[in-house]
Image (cartoon, rainbow, N blue to C red):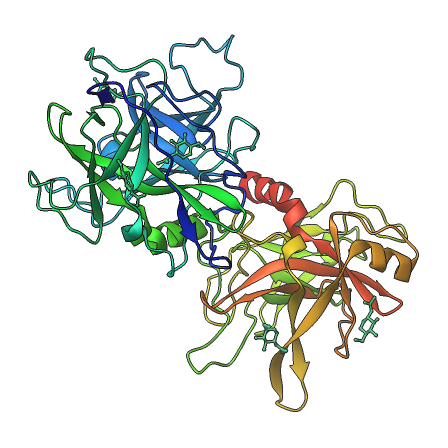
Amino acid sequence: MKPYVSWLALIVLVFWQDGMAQLLDGNCIVSLRFRIAGGHNTPQGTTPWMALISNATHHDLCGGTLIHSRFILTAAHCIKDNKQLFVRLGLYDRSCPASRCTEVANFNVIKSISHPQFDFLYFKNDIGILKLDRQVVYNARIRPICIFLGDEFNSLSIHNFSAYGWGETNRGSLSSVLQTIHLSRREGKCDFIDLDSETQICAGDDKGDTCTGDSGGPLVANITYGRYVHRTQIGIDSFGSTYCNSNGVYTNVWSFRQWIKDTIWEESLLDKDCSDTRLKSGSIRQPWAVYILPSYAKGALITKRFVLTVAINLPADIQKIKVAALGGETFSVVSVHNHPQFTDDRILTNNIALLKLDKSVQSSDFFAPICFSSRLQKSVNTLTFLTVFIRSWEYLGLKQENATIVDRKTCGITIQMTVEDNQICVNKTSADFNSNGEIFGVDDRLNHKFILHGIKSFHKNGVVILTNIQSYADWIRKIVDVN
Ligand SMILES: *[C@@H]1O[C@H](CO)[C@@H](O)[C@H](O)[C@H]1NC(C)=O
Ligand SMILES: *[C@@H]1O[C@H](CO)[C@@H](O)[C@H](O)[C@H]1NC(C)=O
Ligand SMILES: *[C@@H]1O[C@H](CO)[C@@H](O)[C@H](O)[C@H]1NC(C)=O
Ligand SMILES: *[C@@H]1O[C@H](CO)[C@@H](O)[C@H](O)[C@H]1NC(C)=O
Ligand SMILES: *[C@@H]1O[C@H](CO)[C@@H](O)[C@H](O)[C@H]1NC(C)=O
């Protein structure tokens, strides 16, 4: 980043009406008040979303931003031609040795996704997402930046930004310490490129410019809405003039919000071919549903090879277990994975099991895995009800019913036992949620998917206790990957 002369920070507030927030990751960085940055170095600790991307020979290539617990946003041109990429988070000073800067976390990139219409010649659709090898644990030094997904938000109204990067400084080499600069929107000033006003932003300043090495880094605005200031990513550093002395082109993040959301959603699913819930006719179905014999517990196909059900009442002899799909097909089981801490006591702790089928299921309209995403799912704490499929004698088909979530404390009083974090309590309505292993989830009408959240463990005194599948996401992933 090359400042032309020294400058003083300006504080810009963009006011946003309440109730419009639709954030990609609700844990993103917000603050109640401002600090003023003066000078070129970014104050340490104010950019916990900043990522540095390097290649296999330890060359630092580009900046990026943490936007979700497993995903980095950057420019597509940073990804192109690089087979193996690495990401550092929590980083401020690039030259700080690992022994001293222990807060820095290193990740391998397991998948690089460039926008399918990225055009290297004209730098159109210069946006990409990196999937990290594991989930990022948020702390004071590592936290995602906000990305507004709502249609109401429009970044065209935002004129002042901060840009961040470890890019080239006036001295011509990459900077060791993260740099920042204030930029403003410059309509019609990026004439070195045929600017697409929908998807690209031209920004610059009389006092400095972003430069080589800043690519992929963010253009950030402070968006006030509600009582909080949201550090919000507006652009991605894409393309600039050779000498870093005029204006630069930034990818307009908001115009790619649907692609970002869809990509992360898809990458977070346990099985990407998971089933749609609705047929074109609008009728509902549950092609993942299975019965476990001989117990008649219910279960759900969660990958093409594994069925999820409750651990209770499974025969010790796996020869005796059969999995029956609703369409009539029956499978033998080659291994049973009860949760290692399952206890057959009154509260049935960790009542969850995975069954490996003797063969992979050929996904079809009638038999296909349920959707389960451990990353994008709303936490149960923010949900008020879960949906369950019940057989309706009126329609001779399926219908859905909403079961109200009862808070753990009230539920505990009702059943006179302590309800644990890894359990969900729902009110037993008129429906007959009588089978163990009954599947509860969220009907995502927008994506035509039904997202698994819980399976029935037992019922008592008018409430149903479910095993909270989200709490077991890592355990499930491990078994499914290893076996
Ligand atoms: C890493 O990037 C540097 C600088 O662009 C390049 O010279 C080097 O060949 C790259 N290494 C790999 C493994 O691609
Ligand atoms: C953006 O900053 C400029 C100074 O660089 C200031 O004159 C202008 O009012 C600011 N715009 C907004 C919308 O706050
Ligand atoms: C936004 O706020 C941060 C402090 O929280 C400040 O460092 C930065 O300069 C501000 N950016 C803009 C564009 O006003
Ligand atoms: C369940 O709740 C959703 C959202 O409030 C609603 O659209 C749906 O109609 C409800 N379904 C039933 C069967 O009540
Ligand atoms: C369950 O719902 C019924 C009927 O709406 C209500 O009377 C009861 O208090 C609810 N139970 C709990 C534990 O919330």
